[in-house]
Image (cartoon, rainbow, N blue to C red; front, side, top):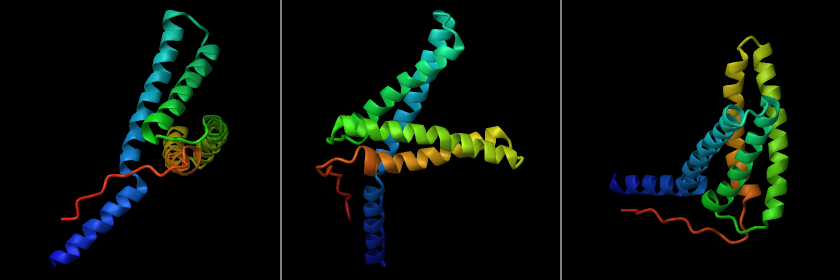
Length: 153
């Protein structure tokens, strides 16, 4: 019985390392900070500097995207691959996400479930594939990153 529990804990720890639970938590924190930077920059530009909303919105979004790229690269995934290659992949993913979000929101809205529900679904979907693409494609390092070894007692 005890051996079975130890084996199960060992398998779960390996699965956690494979999925990158540490990476996932950092990914989510950076995502929340990116949103705060986006909204904060938008508010600052609109309310303090009286920049037209049509101009302030993309500026704020771009500022948050640049922060997100840098923080995910340096803090979350500690990437050692080419920054320019990562940035090109990141930019391609951003373009894809814009179109995918538009399609998901509109399809779900057309099905009568509402655009807000569509936006939630699109956000969940993009977060899921973004995490995997960041980890295994965009910020994939040429050198392996050491993961902590779980205590198998």
